[in-house]
Length: 476
Image (cartoon, rainbow, N blue to C red; front, top):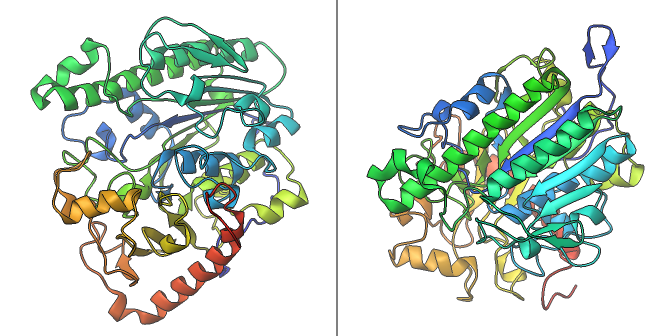
């Protein structure tokens, strides 16, 4: 395979995806869940959580088993929309103004619009709602979200349809699925293919759900019962979506992508698929996502263990949808298309590295966090630094200092596992193939690997540092 230091876009050669003798430009539905862990479904080994519809989708999909995302939600969303690691678009936090995605960057819906797709967004956006940043101004023909991405309004929420605030009744996740299915039905009667981006607020806190979904888990205590109930409601809605596509006779013509946005949260102590880490951490448990790709009769269901990530979604969907990328976008993008890999397990991707950073530093402290809670994925290797800066600032470092003090944290009773610290300023290397739980550091046995990956990180940081346009106190 070709050896490159970091993920670079390779020119897309259109694949002839066919159904019979007719060239297919599929409908595309991307469902992104919020704060659901990789292990939180039946097929991934959860000891009691029942997810029949997620399990069905798992069984009918190409399953990317080594799929990397960002440690928190707004960064992952930026990478999905841009095909670039989030720092390239200026997104370094979930809070304002650092979640504002650079308005000069071309987005996934813009790319698909140019290929003839009708596009719509339903649910969480989290990349800015002020003038010029709203989803309907970033390529979506229409959008339905929550004003200011108010995480707390689970029932009867105010909604933002494009630029108009409207009222609604019911449970928020149900409402967004209802609206998405209504739009899909309308588009299914037309001549254009459609792209539906459905980003749920479940199962992010606050943990609120109709009682019937929490009841099966009441022996776990109120908090976990509500958390697993939120996942149960999400599974029910996913089943409704799959059934509606069947009823509309759209399933065979529709690619469904189902994935989560970051590592697990309230359920990591119960089951975390054998991984170390949770949301907000650079450990694999904070950065590994499930990623299911179902296109009936085109993609043969199977596990695919090639290293892939959120930055690859835009170029992959562009290739599948027959979109042409501008030279400017090709030169900026970091992801590579894995469309060929989905269709043919004998295909290969270029050998590349994927870069990760929690980036939740305190405003004005970006340079002090160059080596704080950051990592690189390459082949079977994970090189990382997990810990705090030397300045004692707030932000994510405050959370990690609480872990060192063995204070109870929001998501876990086991901070020494999920918030494990590495020595400040020292890269630590883990072999995920032989040690998926990251219990054994092996850098001393592979100094050449450490050096190669660390050098690539330095090149990457120099490239993205000037692009951090939302940082308070930033200077060259």
